[in-house]
Image (cartoon, rainbow, N blue to C red; front, side):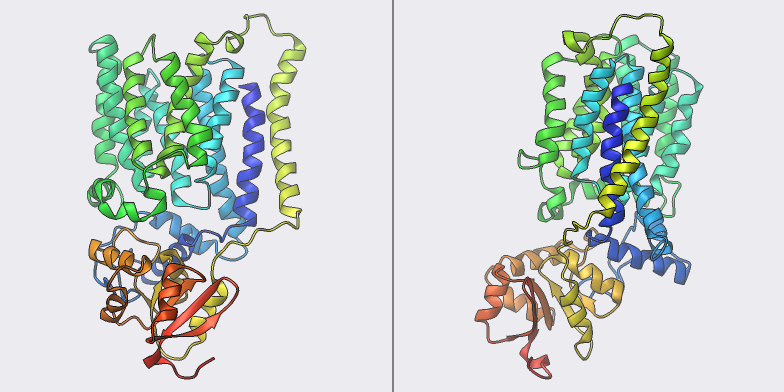
Length: 470
């Protein structure tokens, strides 16, 4: 693993600097902080949408990110760098565990480093201060535990329970364990390993219900996997070559798996896992990273077996210099990560997060209460957080009924009847980017008037609600 430490050190620097220097770029953080503050204030987890939305109040909601949201709310302010750094640490730990899994399978140091590089690229695009990133160590940790041939493998069951309180991807735990048991039976017949993994599969199925939502969490995950509204969200779109994380990270791993095959001991376990995570990856772009983290150790072992220059070096008695280098490289990688992170944080280069903060502040300053439609629904998360209006749709996305999503699509794509849909929902304020189709439609309508404009965004109000023109 000695070369993999260097790779992980470089990417860890990127994770930490991105998380700490640019923590606000994800609009979802706004409603997640609001959720955490709501839980702290009411001492209860909301189970339905409330008056913060006018399109679907009372709709059932499973706020699976509740634990992440609590942390985000508590850390708001001076503690934020520590919380953001903890999420960056989750991504780093996921890479370390993945490299360790490859090492345990007998992959050579060069193969581990190459595979780790590809896995890091695959998760880079999805990285952010997000609940799904906090779940990555649980994905890899669960796989690492079920691969153990001994009683420690049973620790996967309590890990699944904790995982279910972090993210709904915990639904993968019984699936992974079940496939591992089936593959083990195909490889070796019924054995203690198969029996133990069946226990883990059954135990983890019960464990993922040990959260505030009980059986509602796995049912929610199943519903979400097949929900038609996913086609309207970029993260849930089908994976294609337009995704850099796929094209430069997971696709090379997939091609290597196809080229070198899955052979030898445990071949059916690995084949079933490869098929399962490949289906998961192609079903949604957000799963590209999970595919890479799950499958990299299999690929690294295959490369070690079949590629001459990646083969394991001859076993020799390590010299004192070898032992010193083995200890020095991880330390050097840690120092490298710290120095690169510090350099990036001190840099004056700061990219704008692209969020319409000034426009949202302008909405807050307008007199009266407002029913707000955001052309990018994630923007309305800031309005939910600020409590300055009621929104049509926001970044929580999942609990909104399909009818709301259809109306949203009709409006933002300027389909026939778009203005009538806004009127039917009594929308009086629209936040839109300049030169977007909706902005052009608003310009052509006599029903709307610009209340605020800057270089990138505009706020439109229905004329009947205008108090004074700006």
